[in-house]
Image 1 (tube, rainbow, N blue to C red):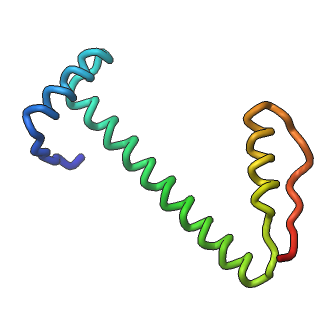
Image 2: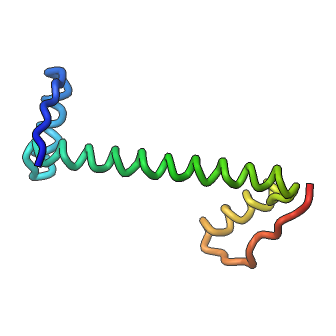
Image 3: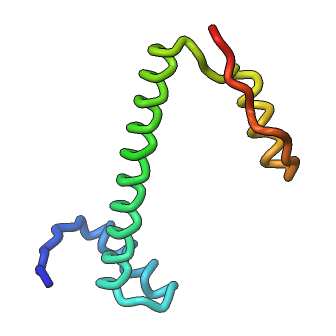
Length: 92
């Protein structure tokens, strides 16, 4: 396992220590967990952007996409627990 040294401002170190204590963790465990979460979120963002770019290229290539109004309604329905048929792709 590799060792890494972090230089934190006194204020950030105190906040991290207080947060760790409140969660019943050591400051080290808290920082490791924070880095895990930040790394996971960065990976999710990267995947999301890659999928969005691929979808954009596909839409430009085929001239077909989902209508934004339908997508927004679909999202609102899902939030409210309403399951409807899947979205229909349309030509531009």
